[in-house]
Image 1: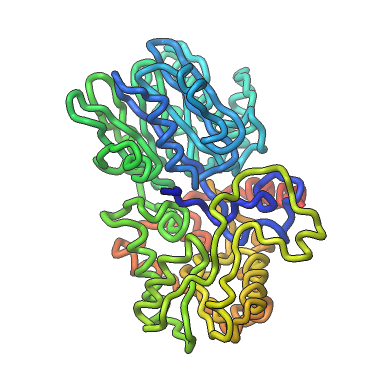
Image 2: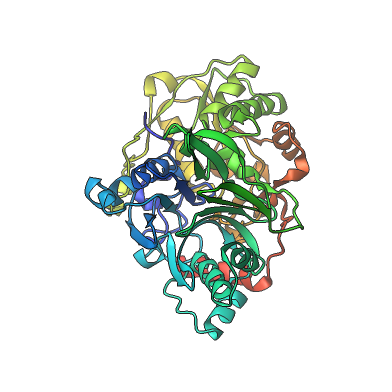
Length: 498
């Protein structure tokens, strides 16, 4: 089975790359990172972590790394590239131990360089700490200044390394592992789901809002072995059983004595990123006791109720738009068909198409089925639009394949605000829905009609408390206050990147 991969894996759309301009960047919010950890004496923890990261590859394709602990000895291998490119049988054999921490990265802070790959490994009074981070801090400037003032030898430009050094500072000041880590977390503001390895055990941590996901699983029961993963698909691939989520503001500490829970923050207010439900997480991952495939079909059905269209067939943008398209078809009664075929083997390559190739319509990722589309009125369902550039090209492709009408339906509300919690979105002036009406967007995309799912429809379809989700990218209501300096730095970086 080929794991779910996000829709932006052709390299003209990868971050920090020579063709990283607005015309060629992906038309979606770009991924978070994936974290994985395991405490399993007697098991090949490096290889299990490799497979766990393989299942989480959709969360980041920039770099991958694994750190293992064999007694007091820490072993580390990380590099740029996909999980399958970074690791092989030989280097996995050089990662013995009973504890492992793994990470697959998409950069939202720090440039695309090997030194920024994770896990971040830092020495402390009690031994090495290996940290893998999914999320983004919003107080990196004062935290970095504080660490540098205390003579911390920061070698990367990531906020993840800062968290590791903050832990080291607290440990070196005399705290034990649990107390030192909890003190360090209080110095961090923003989104962070962490897997932290030590020679004594492994920790799983979420910020007080639980913005990014983290789950606990068990591997066998005699003795109990524990697994931490960004999503349940990371458990499934190695045969682990889902136990529960790490709760917002919770730290779990897993050692030979079992699992212990600490509530490190008393100011918890659950605000999980709603885009995990809509797009980021794999459709076979389970959240709120059901697969995300089921939720995505449900928002497709709601979208059909809210925004019907008279058409001959419904198609989805592979892969993330397909469940919603099926739901739309079921409710509308309009037949579902595959109208676009995805090249599932487009991976990370530095061979770029030339400008003339782009102008001639080179299609690295999606190719239309002309005999399916010709002469048809088509409803195309996708999960989001950020800039509109890719969507416009897609509409043009459908019309060139013979579609008589193209009606676009989006299974999320308009994205009007940037994210500062671990998702790479543009500055607000580059978000098409922030400056343009739906009618004007439809004209720019050259569709016959365009409609988005309402925020009420999106949240009601979760069947959970609507207040338990972060919807800042749709509303601008940020659950963790974002300093103006951070907002300005994002604008500066955006201007530099183009």
